Length: 336
Image (cartoon, rainbow, N blue to C red; front, side, top):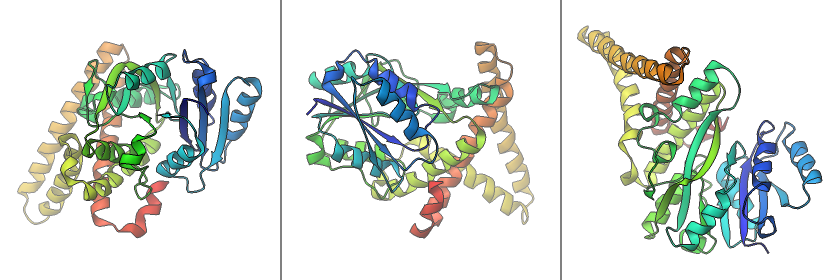
């Protein structure tokens, strides 16, 4: 039995799994005190081969792989939790890389009783080279795109409503339960809602840092944020009081565009309203792109950043509205 279990949901992560495992191996926290449990959704690429290669060259790390035949994140987390033994559970993602002191700082925060769940800040970086991948990574940390999601850009420690990766004591699960496998995405936010309802505290410390690799292309970004929006609606059906302004704006914006477009066929005034709304929206995006282009000295940000933010907004808003309109029978299509 090890004091700390690092649990990792994984599916087709051949590009990043090796760097994650190397980052865990290089942690300042003693390897003898850690175990790593990867719940793999039956990867079809070379992910498992990369894991096996890493194991053969790094025998000092206790590492096991368990199957996650459902291929959804909450099921992966529950599989890994059942296979783990640590009294402290720390989640990481296969497309992330923790700083060398990540585990040590998480353990210290829990031992200092700063919160029942502690986490840190993402440094979002492009998964591949290229101007578009760089723009997507910049958008994923931009307040215009993600609102007040503090774990993406804050430099102040404090209590928050959610953190991206959790570090908890195992006995917390007896109070709040494990992950809801009826929610295929937004499982972390829903888990944190239950912690808060059980009078638990969620502590974010920007000194706890990890690198998160953003989607490399617009298609993947659209699918990702479409899932986020779709499952956010289903999460809000359980906890309607948890909605935040940053989550309400994209579906309201998409709805207003569709409504104005439809009404324009009957009342021409709505065509002008639609045009004005789009002009104002695009102006803000372009100005934001210019600011990023100047600060990063990357002219491509003028085009790339507005494109990425627009895809995030439209996909999230459309996914949210689709969640409102569709039934459980359509959920399987949102996993892809």
